[in-house]
Every structure is written in structure tokens, then in C-alpha cells.
Image (spheres, rainbow, N blue to C red):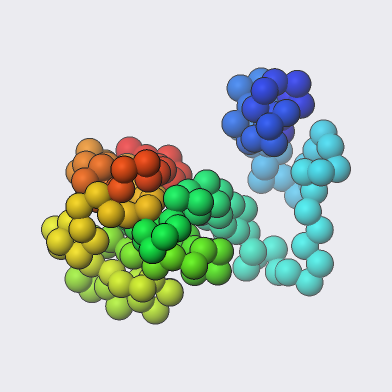
Length: 174
């Protein structure tokens, strides 16, 4: 919950507020049956959505959505979005990217066995990291979202992102 006074909060990025609090971390709550929230805007009615099914959306959904939205403008003029990592965040990001942007969505996966699942989720193509530079091309990706955050994956992102493209690190890298 943001402080509502700092520049991040005023810019609508209150989840990054350095003066705010987090239920279950810096404030009581989080895993409780009920939690008091400081402002109604933090409450989202679930309607008929099952909280058990929708629970992961609060993390994987919002984290992936924020990353895709942040880089979407760089994926114009035929420059693809490359998503590195097919864990929970990467899987959700592929689906969100397919729905939010018109550019090709390419997935970089750890093993060949992950290629088909990435395509089934909506990736235009999928490849292992050792094939990514040849498949994507040097300095051609409009944007890269790295959900792994290792030295190797960040080096790959730097090798394939186009000039004035964007590289985002999604989630909490190692």
C-alpha cells in the first residue's frame, strides 16, 4: 500500500513506494481470513471468480502484465517481444502478450521439451538459449523480458535487443 505522497505513488506506481507497507510483510495480514486495507482502491471484487483458482493472478498475473505493458511500445514495426524463461511468470506473460500486442512473441526456454508448451501457450516460436541469437537475430528484438535474471540470460537479452529497444527483468531475479 503506497503512501500516496511520494513521486512513485503520484505516478500510479505505488507498488514501488519506499514508504508504503505490504500486508503479510511490513504490516499484519496477508494470510489472514480478513485484512484491513487503507483505501478502497486496493480492493477488487472477485464476483464469481473462485479465489482458489484466481489466487496466482495476484502475483504471476500482475507481475507478468506489468512487464508486458512496460515494454509493449518497443514492439512495433515488426520487432518481436522475446520472453526468456518458461516458469510461472513466463507462461502467463506469453498469454498476456498474445492478447495485448500485435508483434510476434518469441520464447527462450531452457530445454527442447519446453518448446511445444511455449507454442501451445501462444508463442509465435520458441527456442533454447543456444539457438536464440541465430533464431531471433542480433539486435533485432523490440523488447526482451527476462524472467530468469542470470548473468547468461541478461547477456542474451543484451545481444538480441534492438537499438533503443527495452530489456525488463520480471519478478525477483537471482
